Image (cartoon, rainbow, N blue to C red; front, side, top):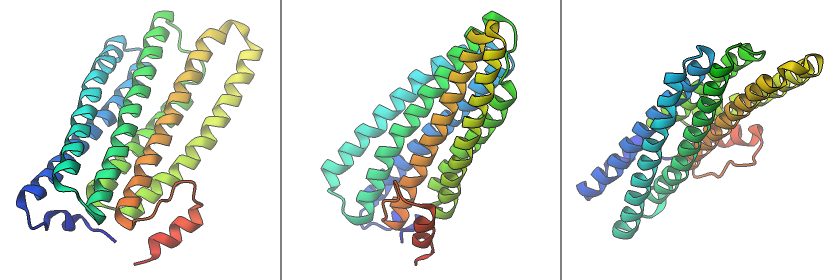
Length: 239
């Protein structure tokens, strides 16, 4: 098992600083992505097209942060040739920044649909579901990043479990919206936009789960992708 403190105990203080800088940059990128998700959902629910445009603009900053962190990871690999837990740290961060960037992409899509729905003017069905699922996935992203900040594998596992609940709610909401479109064909265009928003939110939950899987890999050295909750829980209970 790896603890947070182990990343400040290298013989080389410069190596300590490099790893801490990467971790700080990763969490800063995560904080910006988390805000993107919240702003995109609020832009939709409040019919705030200006906020939605800001979300789309900020996506470029997220892409730049991903590239910068990725380049630093490559430099560390080339200079330090890390082994064991340090290598796991670099791999976990490298994979997780890809998921953060994709969360930013999905938030940008939500913002795009928010602008389109603002122009149509009428609030369609599905906003209650959007508010609820949007709030849940924002918490998932926050908790996944918090787990990374504190090397908390148990919290990461809770995020993974939350993703299952999101998937169930998403399917229920989609069935309800399909029924509504059949009852009122005039609403098809607007409701389809909401369905795409819900799809993006569901994908954000998937990416938060992926980040949590990487944290468990970092802390426990176990690849828990495509693994049952029961098996993961047993692994987490091992010292």
